[in-house]
Length: 263
Image 1: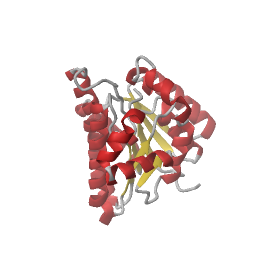
Image 2: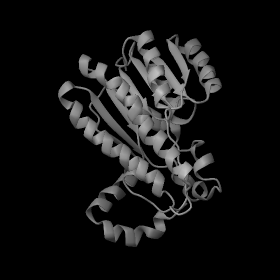
Image 3: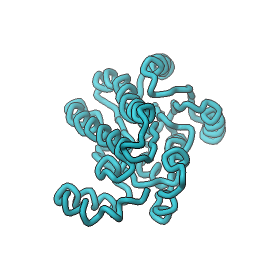
């Protein structure tokens, strides 16, 4: 429980959902926080709440991770304030559920710029100091969609496949310098993610009974911080599907097509 005390933790996409819940749990364990998101008002409210309740240092910055120049600027300010970053949680991301022929180029570019390029840009800012200190942890919030693609999530799944590929390679690159790298692969979570992703509410209606609570996912993430955890797969039974998919992809797609078409 004392592992995070006085550690410096940066969380992107921290204005709501699991990002905000991760921030609350980290503050409760004595960590100093940097919270990043596009919604500055929500961040400022969270900052006041956490500082008053837990008496920890909290800094907030408005950041669109798709803007790589802004990423460079903000992380420069973070290093000026804190000196180093112990844990980076790449949580910022969004999805739009459409069939491939319906997705616009703006939507495609937007998802890749936030989910992939933004994640890589933030990670690249912390890597030199983590390597130099031989200490740190990078946690990338991916998705079960990065393991099993489903109808109407072709672009979103592609971004999460990219995140997993990057994360797995990064883990091997950093192993010798004792920097931990973890991918988090949740199923659907009850957050406002679906306000954009699922405009008609079809998917939420079909999977509501399987939805994870953000507090539960956040606790699993925080419990893993500064430990050598390779992956967090939630729920476990859903991850078994990805194992079967790797072993028997053609059979899985044929038999599971109707089950997977929930959007």
